[in-house]
Structures are given as structure tokens and as C-alpha cells.
Length: 384
Image 1 (cartoon, rainbow, N blue to C red):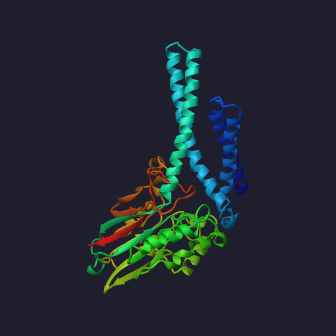
Image 2: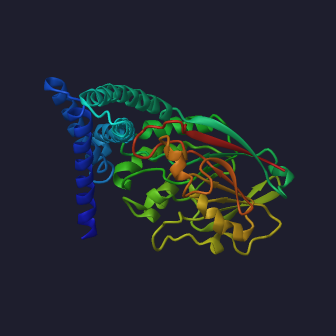
Image 3: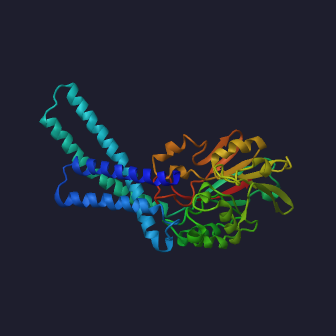
């Protein structure tokens, strides 16, 4: 029953939003004739593409359906900013009406003023949204190298200066394919990292349809190895364990609630990782298994997809945690909403004594768009 209700409710909400935008952008602004038909056509086609995009990577093969996924998810970014803008325009109109009412000057002149405000502000909104989403498309296509440093207590001399590449949240499949993965791989290898960590949410969809988009990951090169942990999206369209098995075929050592020793010139540190905090049975994160019983004087680098997992890691005296998941909100002003549920939204933070670095991620979920939350490939240098 739930499987049936979720898409029905989703379709109903999209229909209501589309009708609301029709009322606010077409009817309220007085559009007539051909322009009204064009505006309504864009709203309807965008809604259809937006709904269909969620099937790309799962029911629909991106090999032929990726243009649908790309355009449909771009529409969601357009829809997001249209909703914010229309709500703001409506609020200003309400204020104008309230001022006129309190002064007892509600008249045809004040109604004309509100009408002109609705028409001109709506036209400006469409232009602003187009520019914003266009900028966001460009920003999201260019992951930047973010250089970071962290001091680790008790770090062996041999690891002082070691460079770790942290890559998370590629989200390839519906809107982006192997070409984007190849770009990330090439830029990462160009940094000559000593160790590479993949922090989850690498793909959206099934292994059958999206696995090929991760194939370039087999070309990642680091003398101390390539390691990875699952994110929440590995469990959505396919079995998370099967996704991790597939990663192994690409040369990625997956950390499934486990800890490994990293040796360099006679020095040793621990690298530990757990499944995502929302992973279903039998993949729940097990912090005791990954972090319990270790040599206390040996530093441990901990990898968990979500920053909030640092609360559990703190119970095991973890030195540093690497995470992703937040995208720093991806579309401003979502950053402020992310801060309500994550102890760190991006960059460095302290969670109960654990140094936590949260990367914005290299890709983008849903819309291949980022606004004031640029994508990154993080290079972290360890220091004593």
C-alpha cells in the first residue's frame, strides 16, 4: 500500500504546485494569448519531465533516458527558485494590500498597483531564476580542489605530510554519466594523493543501469590504497551490499564496519569506516566492531557518510572523521536548513572532541545544479 501511495501523493503535490504557479505567474499577471500558452506549456512539460526524472537510473536506463533525467532535474531547481520567488512576491503584495487597508485607501488605484507589481516582479523573477539556475549548472560542473590540513595527536613521523583525497556524493546516473566520473578521477590523480577515500553516495540507480557510470573509478591511483564506505543512496534503488561488492571489482577496498592498518615507512595508523547511519538490516553501522578494542595510542582516521555519526564515534576517542552527505545545502538558501539537522554543514567542525571534516561533495543530487555551494574534491594533509 505504501509503495502505491508515495507516487500518488507525489504526483498530486506536483500537480498542485504546477497549478499554483499557473495561477500566480499566468492568471495573476494577466498573461493572455500566445504568451499564456507558452508559459503554461513550460509548466506542464517541466512537471512531466520532473516526475519522469526520478525513474531514470532505476526503471529507465540512463543509456537512453539521461536527457530526461538531466532536463527533469534541472526543472526541479527551476521549480525550487520559482516557488521561493512567487512566495516572496505574494508576501510583498500582501503587505501592500495591508498598508492600503489600514490607511483606508483601498481603491482601484491600489489594485492597479498590486497588478503592476505582480506582472513586473514575476517577469523579473523568471529572468532571475533562469540566470541563477544557469550559473548553478556551470558551478556544479566544475569540482574544485580544496586543500585542507589537520593536526593529529600522536601521528607517526612517517605520516607527517601524507595527503588524502576525499571524494563523496558523485550521484552519477540520472543526470550525469561516466564522463563526469572520469573528470573527477583525472583531477584527483593529478593531485598525486597517498590515500584515497570514497565517502558514499557515488551513484543513484541500479547496478545494472548505473554501474557503468562508475567504471572510471578503477583508474584511481594511490600508493596506500583506495577505500570506501556506503552512503544512504547506495540503499535506495538497489541492495547496498551489492553496490559495495561492485565497488570492490573497481579496486576499491570497502570498509563495512571494519578497521584496517595503514603502514608507511614502518609507521602505522588505523583507518576505520562504518555503513551509513540509515542503512537497513543487515547493514546497520556497528561502531564497536569498527572502533572497539584498538590500540589506544595509535591514531585512527574514521570515515562515515553523515557528519552526525561523529556523536557515536566520539565514544571511541576518534581523532578525525571524514564525511560528506550535506552538499552544504547544494541550492542556497538550503544551507540554513541543513544546519538544523547536521552538526557540521561544510568544512571543519568539532563534535564532542572529534575533528570532523565535511566535504561539499564532488557531484550533485537531483538537479545537476549548485548555487553558492561549490563542489569539491578535498585534499587533506596530515600533520603532527
